[in-house]
Image (cartoon, rainbow over all chains, first blue to last red; front, side, top):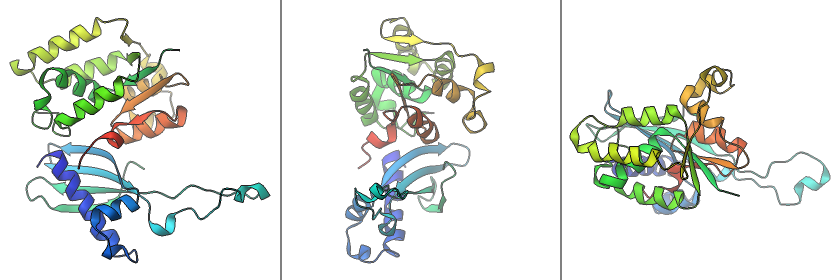
Length: 108
Length: 153
């Protein structure tokens, strides 16, 4: 497997998992869903000993989008207009090509 | 004012190998995480800067990552040529004793902390290591996680 294949596998897996929990997401094309989620690859590492790909990804779930408007902070009340980004680590076996682990990224 | 970019060992490795054998990216040892297109992307990023900043730790690590086989003799030669271009590449020594006192030493290590210490208002860091990129962006928000520019699809 090369890095492109590994990243595609990870991205597809994330789209499949996230489409289960976000309403309307299951009707979207996976690439479309990933774009809507501001999906990005944060890091890629190949573990030579374990023959595994460790891919760190980040994305924003629909309910984690900031709902604050641009002027919300004028009242003096602390607000955040930043989306909350989720970071995950996808581990893929080089031998089987399958995702063997999907969980919180150890880098964040 | 000169635009300066500090780069880590893996970025230097991709550049050095890519300049001679971009086809090795994705195939050879220590290069599996990369692809030939990464060299093109890297060059496009580096073109924005006037000077590259590195540390002895980065050069040593890059040299160690270059496989011993004769296939990489020309990449080793290019590394030597690059280091001798003093107007383009500046090597800065950072004391390890100073580096281990940094807060980030507990999760970044000596080489990465030395790179991080170079980042300021005038120097950005280019790395594919997300932890290092994040710390560098807290100092200079223009620092770059190389993965954000790579074209995987």
